[in-house]
Image (tube, rainbow over all chains, first blue to last red; front, side, top):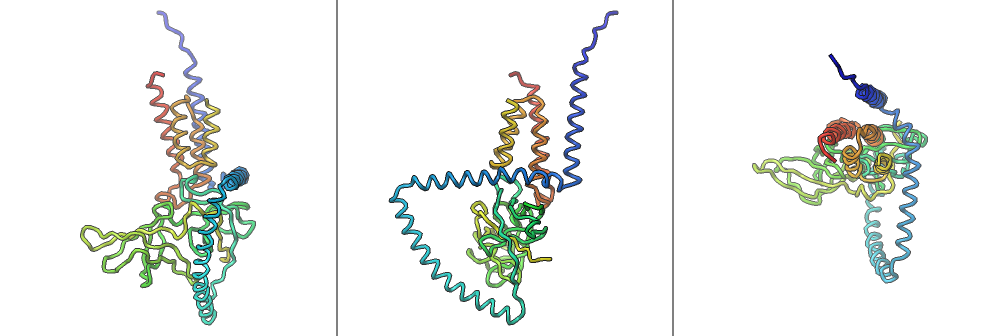
Length: 265
Length: 82
């Protein structure tokens, strides 16, 4: 009988596939067993690109501003001046309330002053698919895992989940499925808010607790930190439970800096 | 083509919204035979950006997506005439 000689090409292909799959499983295994291994190697390199990108973007923005018409600039200047005047009036009231609050805490021996570290945001959603920030402050400036992260000075946005010498990863409280204890409104109803991604939250409460749109949501800490404001209240079909939607007090897509409270030992 | 898609994926991973990288990865698996690199990109995305608070506390969604698009892309590619 005559048999056709088998080609060894498919065998070679199979061996290569097995080798590649083994290598991929090995790469995944390292990342799974040692979660800090890849970030500690990648962040120093990647942050060079992120910083370069931030510089390039700001150059383009400044060039775009230069070519804006003078008329538009004058108009914007007038609008901003009016806004500043209004803000200054509000700030006067706010600083008086803050001073009073501080004085009361000093009397009670609860100061709540922290050691804040400023961090530049290198990466934010939607580049990060996980509702996380990468910031340029790390263990070298005292940042630790678990430190709380604030934006615009007063708004709690997340906490540090990984810290490396030059960079840290911040997990936002709005990560889908993540829960946080909050106080709602002036009645300070304690409840749990669940993240929905992108700075949005949801919570459910009995309809007997009357919640109005615009009511503040705060985090129960000695230092009062704003968290968000109620945007929508919708009762369910049975009218016994209502779903409350609220947004973070800051727009996480517009933030450039955050403050890390590195007070905790 | 392979090199260009690798560069596009690297740029997406560092600078562009995550869904851009997802689309490039899907396209690459259809266009290039055995585009194994996509799984490495998935692992890198998880290493760079994931937290334990990710969907259900599971921080390997990008890796799963990469394996899925690789398998689907390769399987569809072998059944199509170009």
